[in-house]
Amino acid sequence: MNIVVLVKQVPDTESLVQIAADGVSIRKEDVKWIMNPYDELAVEEALRIREARGGTVTVVSLGGARVQETIRTALAMGADKGVHIQDPAAEGGDAPATARILAAALKTIPFDLILCGQRGVDEDNGQVGPAVAERLGIPHLALVVKVELLDGRVRGHRLVEGGTVVVEAPLPALITTQRGLNEPRYASLPGIMKAKKKPLEVKTLADLGVDPATVGAAGRKILVQALKLPPTRKAVRMITGETPEAVAAELVRVLHDEARLI
Image (tube, rainbow, N blue to C red):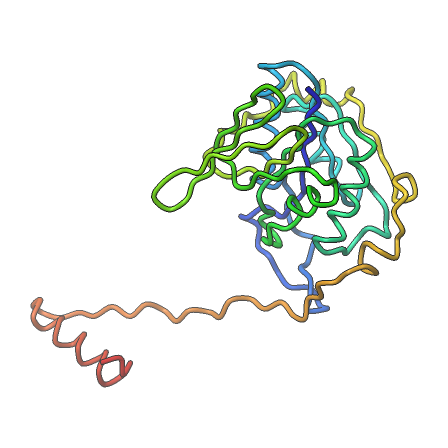
């Protein structure tokens, strides 16, 4: 079985994010970059399917030179090969533009199943996976927490309020992964050493036949008007008193006279 995993490099959620001088992007100089956590679930699931059924796992990612670190991480986890789409004209694109490029790349790669995270933790829009499936004309199973492969079909379980929905689709298909699907493995030292020798192909927009005017910053349909940090919260005020009754009375007074909530 040929499995392709789409991965994205995102800022570590523990990094201090600062807004850049342009007011519509973040400062990238001091940010630690990691594989999108939801994509880690996709890589792990792909490896488990390959271990059970055989085949290959190819990792595809879009971005600048540093993205190769994330691809190598997936290779160190056990993926077989990587494809890095690197082109200055592809930078600064929105979700539809990203999907256009990834779909073009996937048309050059044999696949039976595509896996990717249900969203990126940076832009958090959850659009790329479904848009790729639409461009490829294949079924899309969203927010999957359990995958079952049948004869020529795939079954996905997704959680809803109060229960589980089970859906099936013919292969090839695209699945977006949700937390609870699995626990991603760590890259072992032997895996890290092997990853250095695994094939990693770099492709440009010209290689994929993608018009630069339709992607990247030039092809954006969604424009960011401004980025703002959340407002600073006021310090917590502690209500004290000699007795519980006194504390309660002071709390009522503050809520009524100062906060004007009651």
